[in-house]
Length: 116
Image (cartoon, rainbow, N blue to C red):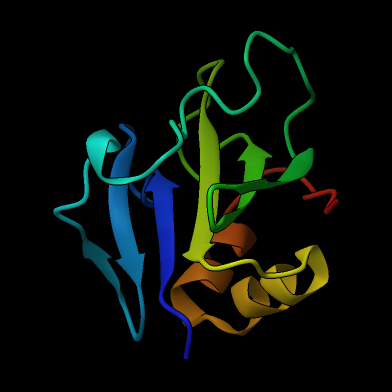
């Protein structure tokens, strides 16, 4: 199975961190310098509604950015999922939907996710 990564909050605490999502959600040693994109800056200064999702492909990574968090209600909170590889948007959305920790994160979001 493709390794799924996440940058965002858990379902119980504020604060955005890097995570690996496999059988469970595990803190990752990954850091901003380890990937060719900044999950904090994918949308630039664009203001969007909570729940709006966007798909990106950047230097061999496929990314879904969801505006908002399963826990943190502050503005600027985000939930960013990605895999290494050029994966079509619908396949990445399906991978997120089949991953138990990712499903828990999505279901804890206090808004509807509008997939790209």
